[in-house]
Image (tube, rainbow, N blue to C red; front, side, top):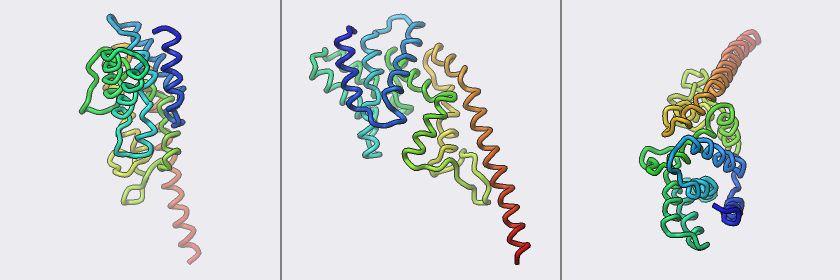
Length: 228
């Protein structure tokens, strides 16, 4: 991909990005992750890969406005139409579309091509480790979800069996399980190098809020009883 085409695709991406948890810097990190992963693979179509990375989250606005819309499906279609409208070959636009539409963490539509698998791994790598924790907390704040919820007995839930969204639920439902979902050896290795930072953060914050909640409740009940 030459500089002129890169600038064209990048410019369109920048017009579409409004979500601060999935901003242009996330896109660039995914692109850089993908290039690191691709360096260890043979037969990569770098034009398809670079274009797919740049455009993989352009459907976020549609999903944010309507939760029933999958940003990967919407983004793939937007990318396809944009590329065709700007003179890119049909097969190229189709390959990019398929990469984007299969990059989301869903079992129903796994990536098939090498470029799609690299994009998937590069995107998931940005949700691993300390960076993944930071981005998840940022998103929780954007959509006004809590850090955690309480169990029926009043203790702090670890998120594992929660039905309502929260940061702890996101960690148990998604972040904790990511490390077994990589397609490339390089992606898996890079992810595992980040894992401890995420585990330590979750365990520390869970311990801190649990102790604070438990001891605080006991002290409150003591004060209330003493003043009856």
